[in-house]
Length: 197
Figure 1 (cartoon, rainbow, N blue to C red):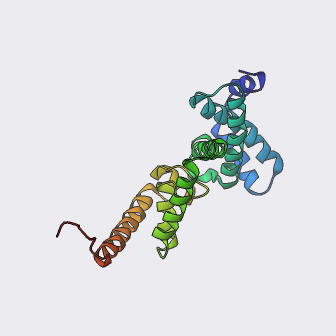
Figure 2: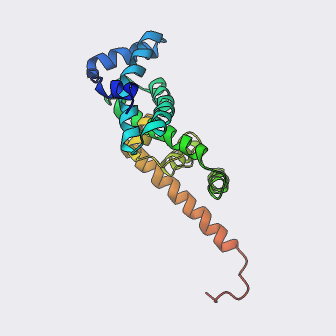
Figure 3: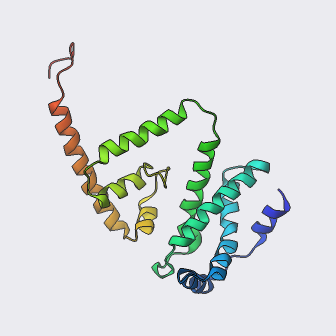
């Protein structure tokens, strides 16, 4: 482990009250407060990279990409929701590391699969109310900005909703999708040689 990573792991997390104060200042555009949150949050980035079992150059690359996720989380973080920044940012950090890992894979079967999944999600969710579509994209990892499935808690934090609201919206979306798929199946021509119903 290099000195940079060791130094980040040795940092003590900031207290909740200080974090809230810095986050409120950062939301008003204070660059120093934002920088302080980024510095404090880098410990979480390293922890997430270490949990992936990475070391050496791979660890440094993951920390670098995770830092992008951290910054995105900080720019969206609402300190008045009662959630610590490390908890809120955890998904963003991991999603960015995952996205970078996908970029680094050699061309092969994976890339068409990702493209096909994106095309499938666009077709499937077309016409669905945006609130419903957004929840489904995040829950099942279909969103470009969230390429891995998110928990209901993470979706709630990301969209500023309660977990109960996310559960309700997800249920409503799934019911609409089931109805759509049932209509498609009903309209589909019978397959030659298929067993009779």
